[in-house]
Image (spheres, rainbow, N blue to C red):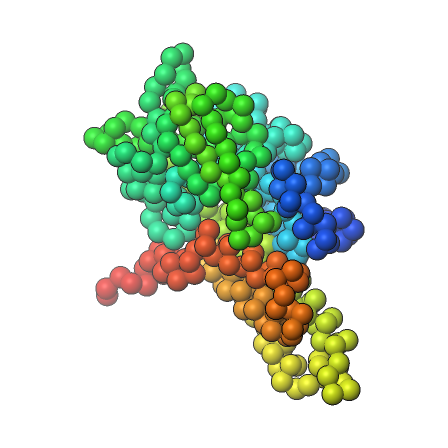
Length: 389
């Protein structure tokens, strides 16, 4: 295993960091999340056209850059440093891999090039706030209970006319669901006796679709409530017997890796900003960073961030460890964000201070993709640690 990054990977990191340093400071982030889209469309277009960010891990045959998960994880580490509000995770981390894995050749040829050039954004809608379970991050997703279990509730699908399907139900906490041009909706079909979970494609302008942006703890992760009332949809793929839970688990491992990289970037940035602050903030005529107790706390945080970064990079090499890496990285971000608020003193406790952006990201991601003890427990179960010998 060669742990060194290639020149191309270093260039991706450097170019993206320089651009985001100019266009995505704390003030720009706060302004972007308050727009109707929840992000800066001009910056997204620039990231798509100049850097090919949404198509970074897509094959060149579909207009992508032709890189892989490692390059996308490095990009997510940089977007995490600035807490960039963008459709990157929902589109490139969830939507594109699902379409690539399950879509027909026609669907892939129609949708993936538009994702690669940034003109189409996606959102993955799971009923009941069960995103972590649907992606097999916090438990086994094979039963499909997270999508309604085949009973009333969740989203139900029934065949319509001309090969279309009709969806009825609702889903909350859909990442970027209010602004995405295409929804990938998990729905049950077949009734209770032959219940199975399938994925369906719903365009943003489809009749019977209602989308409402919700107030979320972390505004950089906009969420929406999706309501479908006999909404026409297309089946993703052509085989209704496809192993959807298995594909979701594979995509979930990759998404967990990207989330882990984002968390590492955010934790590193929060630590850097805290170090800068303690160098200039004086108490008793000395910079508070010169006090031994503060140095010890910062040293502990540095070790925690470096350990989390190692876990994220290992997951980029072996995505099967994405869930465990995500648990470690989210915990690192939570601890670093909390310490950043403490070390900023009185100003850090004000809700408007930028330190709280990192704290909100840590809390929100854990609520969406955790909790941490379930991420670790599921990883232990997969590894066979709880099997009697």
